[in-house]
Image (cartoon, rainbow, N blue to C red; front, side, top):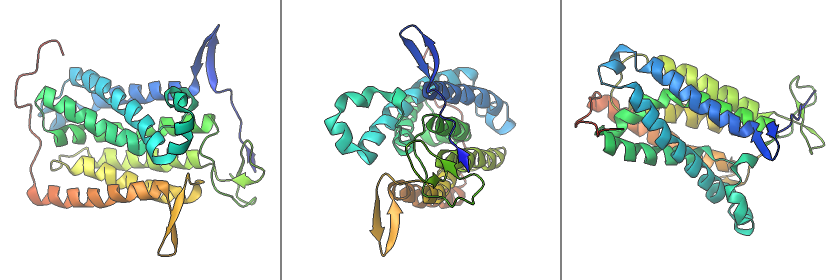
Length: 276
């Protein structure tokens, strides 16, 4: 059985200034977005749509706002509304962890909608472009959860080689943040990156990401201690699974629509505003 290493959540301390590992994981996620994005804009089927490095910088700013605001509001509304109702100031303490992917997902869609209107691009073209840039950033966030000893897993048999003694828990558990980092993040990235290397119909890449993540998250939730769960037709369903089901259903519908319509992406429909 492994023992959680319990690293210091503070990576760098300079006087009263503390830089947390959790925050650094977000910096890493945004850096990966830029690095992968610069690789992606060189792919022939992407280059013909007129994507530029400046677009990446601009979208990153909007995306950061969507991730942070949406992710935190999702945590507050979807998972722990009663706790934050009694501790409202902790809503702003994001360095303690507690960011909902599903909230961040909705926040990024809204942010990209605003950016697409500004840039004169179709929203689905934007989502198709950024989808493969997201999973590795998600994986970095789950590593931050592990460092913070958040999101412990369900009880694991002691014979499991990677069963882990989690801080504050007297029995071995599955290291669920690592599962989600590997499956929901890295595995989804590999599959989606390979899929997106060729031209696909509009909406297909974004829908494929949504489908892959929804299915992966539904699976890894079986190993994670749920924030809450309900029983439907005698089957327990966790909060994460309930939030993933609409993603799966919606993604399948979008994929069918995308391949039936066979509409391809297009360059911007208007000149970009100056100084953007």
